Length: 90
Image 1 (cartoon, one colour):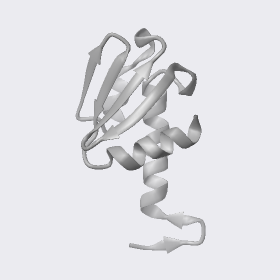
Image 2 (tube, helix red, strand yellow; image 1 turned 90 degrees about the vertical axis):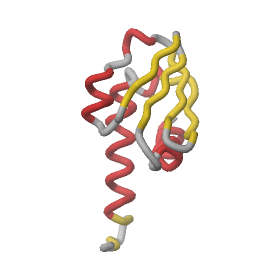
Image 3 (spheres, one colour; image 1 turned 90 degrees about the horizontal axis):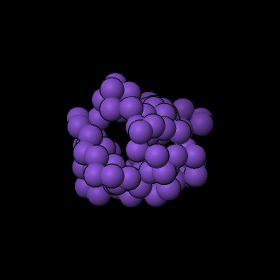
């Protein structure tokens, strides 16, 4: 893996993926809570109608589970670092 002065390529990729997932969840202001859980991002959103499943899948999600304002985004083993990136944005 190449390392650059301002972070690794993987870190940049993860940050970019986190930004796309935030957009798919309706923006940072729509996210009340986020938690990484093995292969899923467990989120609580303000307005579930703002969640764009197609955008989440385009960002790399394998699936989306909606239960009212609770949204689970299935993204694989990167769930924890992506959750941390999203928390940093909040």
